[in-house]
Image (cartoon, rainbow, N blue to C red; front, side, top):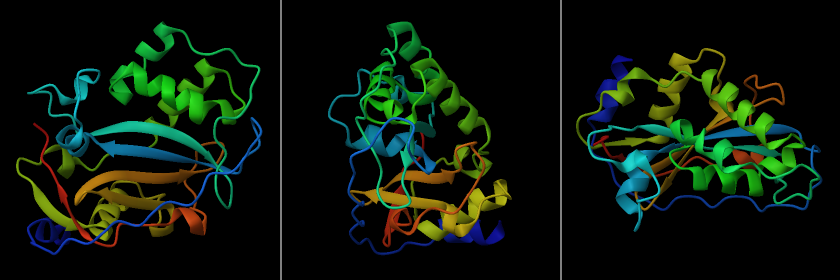
Length: 215
């Protein structure tokens, strides 16, 4: 962890982020593994034009990582917007995800685009998001940030691996956008155990990025 503290203080150059692989057609319940996507809220709050729907950006909350989604994946590509006979979640269902996801609107969108492909009901899919999140320990250092720092993807990966011994370098991906940390994506089996990501999902940000401090 000493190396992590040293790396957080190093000023480095910025470069473009890599693009993501393409989505594919899919059927509900037919997929190989999940990606749990954790967004760094301070970066989103800094770039978003309208944050009224998310309490993650409220001053004084010091929100760090929030859940972007739990995404069914193929070994190459992923399904989205799958047809399903499961009913859509109620407003109460999506409101109950605000503590993890920051807004009910995001919870609804994630169900529509990704949750339907899980083959689960909306309530069970949201339960799986909650279960997956409890399995990942957020490194304490990141919750204590009191200034913006510049760092590279391997430093963030090392911190998560140290806090979660079951994770491997190939099982976690760090993305950036606009020069800022965007997301940490962790690959999980269908029963929510750590696994390596398929090659097309291992697309780390290759640049130095800024990790804005929680406000």
